[in-house]
Amino acid sequence: SDWENDLALIQLKKPVLMSDKVTPIPLPERGQDLADTLRGTGVITGWGWGIHLTLATSLKHLVVPLANHAECKAEYDLTKRTPAVDDHMFCTGPTKYEENVCFGDAGGALVVTDAATGDIYAAGILSFDKSCQTNKYGVYMKISSYLPWIHSVIRGDTETSSALRSDAMSKMYRYSLQQ
Image (cartoon, rainbow, N blue to C red; front, side):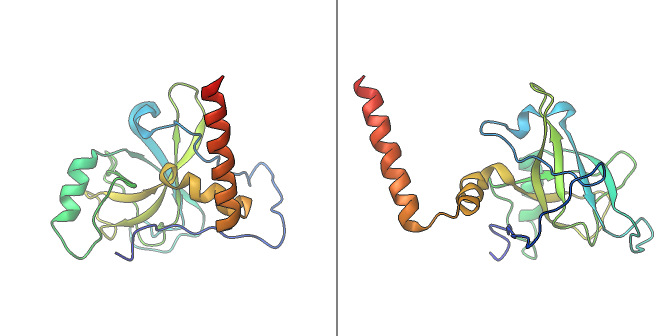
């Protein structure tokens, strides 16, 4: 579907000036998993429409619960108007206050806290939802599924350099087994 691999990386012409209002969100580390998140919630930020379907005038945030993957997948599989929810995606449900993501929030990062370390990281990017419905799931692209691709793009890998790196890693691994 057109929704698979719903991710893009951009290179800025100028560096971003960091401040108390502008800070990066870390990527997940290898091995960090959504199952290990603190309290099973995340924070989504976005410029999406508000409760009365009005445009946002400032960046908003919402604490949302992580949802059961099988239940979310089943709900979206019922309709053919949305892509299938696969293992490279995860879902959040509505809040107890019946708030949810809306138009304009897609592309926003969902941040979670690792329960073991207390570290925060971007777990997903909002891909799609059921058009502002408060009792439905939001579907996110799982960043950890794309870390190898993200790192290869950041490094500027070509097919040749990637193959050379893979070959070197294989040789190092075989050598370590012989020791």
